[in-house]
Image (cartoon, rainbow, N blue to C red):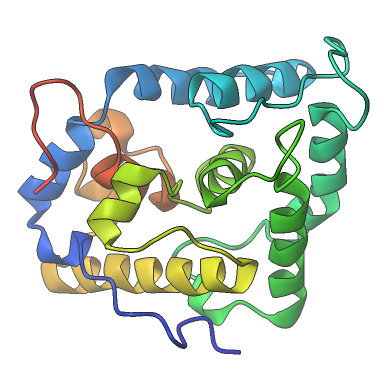
Length: 223
């Protein structure tokens, strides 16, 4: 299946000027900016604890309770440590995937993304995670390469409902990648160079998330 089949074209960032994009990214809620920098600076030995902390802060599995770490052991296995361990070979398989290349994803990488989706549906102790929690987990574990996170703010801006399957997720990501490429062709500038200087080290999936995600109080919605 071609990733873009059956998905309405997404045109959000491509309709912004570079100045509007910079303002949108700069207006992203500051607490989430701090969370992200903490994540990028987290040593591998502390990754699962920080992963749990951020997902709780981001209410990734609301209204269900997020699984605990093995150290916390607040329920029966599996723990978040287990999910992260199970995800490792599939994360390795998509290591080269970005928003710029996801439209050309190959079957082995599609299969890896299917597996990641399946693993992170298990984020809550009971019930299943939605695309909100799944995409937040994968945004973190890919350091922003595969994003955005599909919270209510982002879905509203994209005019989409909850994403129900990994193949639909890939298709939406492919359309978002097309949206980014359209912006770059239109203005002749890479997405990463059109944002405020303090954010230029971030991956496109994270920048897209920031452009559409929760606003800092008083900044208004992204335009």
